[in-house]
Image (cartoon, rainbow, N blue to C red; front, side, top):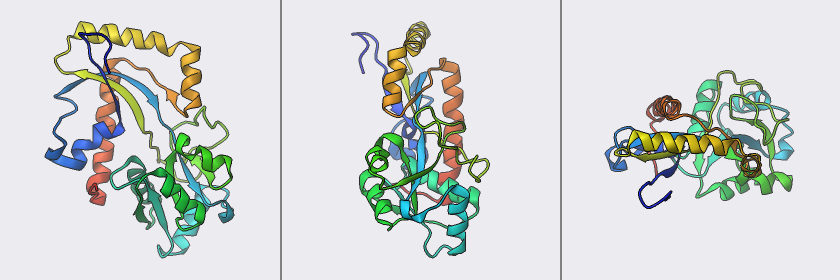
Length: 244
């Protein structure tokens, strides 16, 4: 993304931070050595969804049902191996102390379709992708993955509120610049982004896309990325996750 002829900054997502943990040397970059953090842009809240005929009132009920099957019918979908919703499923199963088989699909739509058909027990998915399925009543949302409730779905409790304490997972979007970018330029861009964050129309557009705006200072974004990278690296190693 070009700001002008001399300054370049890039829009990144959570996979940017965890890519080296998944792909090792094949990733071809180091998030901390090759880039400077600019700002977190937005949280991308995910929700956990099930088939509506399951009539499960909350996440605690889902966990009880899956545990009662002793793993025989416990499975969850993702949009592909190594994706955010795959990692969320692994973290969820670990914290809930249950067995659940990961079933990867080629994208969110086929994964959601499998949940809607009853083939799959549950999945984590971003609100924007799930919207057509939610509006059609084809899947039922149980909770949001973020630490606090999302403005996009304020009546939906968090997973932690719903019975799986200590669970939180927040995919995100942010901006970075090449490592050689002068600090003065980083400061100028950061200031401009914080001004943008106060624009009501910007916040409305974000909400329409199921995003929670979270503009931050470069240092705060750096600390956030480091903690997020460490968190998911532990999940990847523990579950021995290998990307497609």
